[in-house]
Length: 252
Image (cartoon, rainbow, N blue to C red; front, side, top):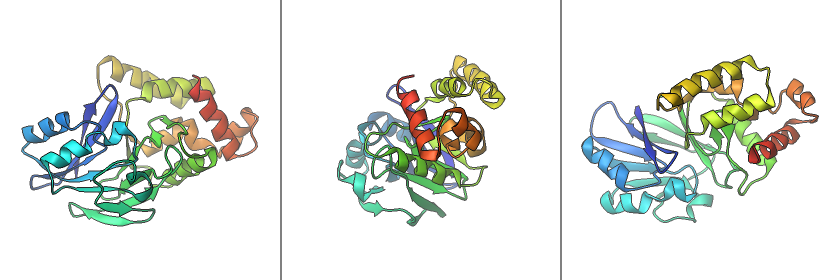
């Protein structure tokens, strides 16, 4: 599939997925309907599928308007989160697999940010859509779940192949990396990535997607089971380190 980011609101991304041939498409996390419809019309695309990673309005706010314009479109969301918005046609859970444009989409239940949050993993396209669970260089806040849940959700995503590209829901990389450097001031990988991201943002370029390999090297929330990092922060296990890091990021 071809994947193109569509900036929405102040810092959101919707992701438009198109097959190699045909004019059907899918959209991940449309916060607004108008800009998405305008984009699709400019490309002569027909919306067939909407994928919702979680229920927050800045990821689902455009669904109702899109369904008015494309009433035949299917909407995939977890049953837990779908009760918060209308229009879901296909309820999904952990381990479910469905076909989209001749390739498989694997559903991962990744609670923490919300209780029903899901990530959509497309092995053939080497892409995972993580919403607000895993951000580039960071992770989402704990709005509904526990530190244990979100910690385990991130480690679950980390098990995917390292050449997978992470497509998250917001342009937060720069601030997340500043926090990562605060956590580990001597981490050369974080220093190098922050310099690169600073340059990208100065030129107005997006920093999403990012390789999972890069995330594993520079995102402290994906290394909560690192014994050396646990010791450095006075923590005894992965969950306590994750909770420590999340509290620090909340006030950073």
